[in-house]
Length: 514
Ligand code: DHE
Image (tube, rainbow, N blue to C red; front, top):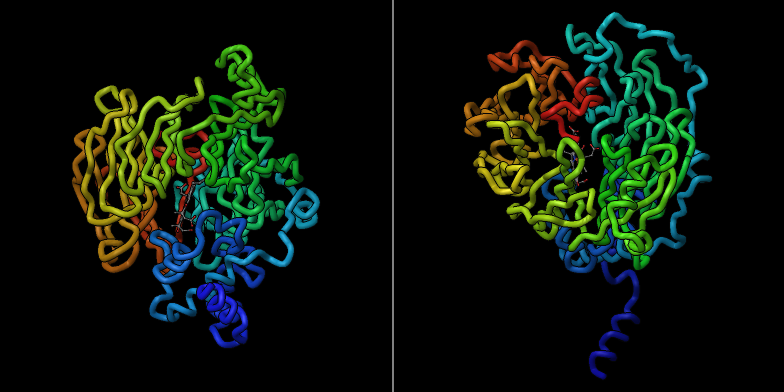
């Protein structure tokens, strides 16, 4: 009874007595998360997208920030009661739930009236050695000739591009996605934008179907996979994501599994992996999926038929970070929050091994290659300075390579002898570790510009040159000879992040993250 009286007296207190969460949000949060709370550079801050992040955990994120993201900590700026007020504000439902279906998406579609497709590339450079540099500092992409390193074009992108742009299978078109769900189509041959559409309100990444006809957009908000026609950016399907028991789930990421002719989805909130068929009739592989299960199990495992047929694979815990073997028979999955690492055999549709991957492995940045005739993979960890090396035949831990700090991206190339591993945060964020792919030893630590963040490597088509970002507003892309490790040149860029070579991406070159 006493507790009740105290609660009622608190409820009766004038609203202005405490800090105003809405006002704090408008002052400090809206610039990244949008005044509508539907997301911008940062994710949407509404109950639907916050998921399990509530109460004290939410306040901790606001106070401490999030490692490896752009989210700063506000402990020094806000008092504990102010943090609680803003946490309560973002945890409250919006007056009306946002709806983002086909009609809303199509209403945003903006096809450029001035776009005229060129009959052939309008430049002399090798179209297969074009390399794109995403410059997040001023939302542009530079289109580089991978041989001469000349800039052929520099076009504006939507705000806060995230994840790798995806190329059409012939390398002619590229699709770029921003965190607030805009998808942009650009014609490399014509050096011109084709158009854009807002496929989601808070999106994660995109994937291209094997035949190049469909582009899948993974989103937290709506909690759905949206499939666009690559031809005209129209909506082919919006597939709401929910577990078998109906629990809605955010889609953490979507990947193309070329050999399976499917999209594979990571679901954030339910213990399932989804596979979506992308062959016109669901394809022979969709039939194979059915046959790989005992008769009568089709309903139980949720296999459907036809284009965009969905298959559910149950897992022991939600997995939100994936890596695949080159044949896409095995998926290596991790749960960044729970420290789970498992191997799922996609053919039989079940977990077959657990992985010794404590901490926060970043499988999305994993790479694999051959060593002594055996395929091994490497993945960095987001919270500690080490790289785990796993044997992909028996899933044993081959080695843990110590580095000077947590890294974000790993890269190599069949034509390069080293893994290039960055350190993304902390005192050593200016260091790039070069690891011999055969001895697994760190053979060199480069510091191109002391004190400035050095991250993400991409190679030219033949692997002879490595392009590394100085990830700063007045940054640069440094081009190295990948054999001698000598610097060739520096190209000034505005906070360059990822770089993407057409050939490496469309051929799924060894050493390229997915
Ligand atoms: Fe990324 C790729 C998830 C934070 C820059 N990032 C990816 C992919 C996933 C992912 C699933 C692979 C998708 C693809 O390319 O199709 N990233 C996440 C997160 O969950 C995380 C940790 C938290 C978040 O807020 O989403 C995260 N990522 C970041 C950043 O803070 C980075 C450094 C800066 C930024 O731009 O947001 C960042 N992520 C990148 C880049 C790639 C990427 C540049 C593509 C790498 C590649 O070589 O393909």
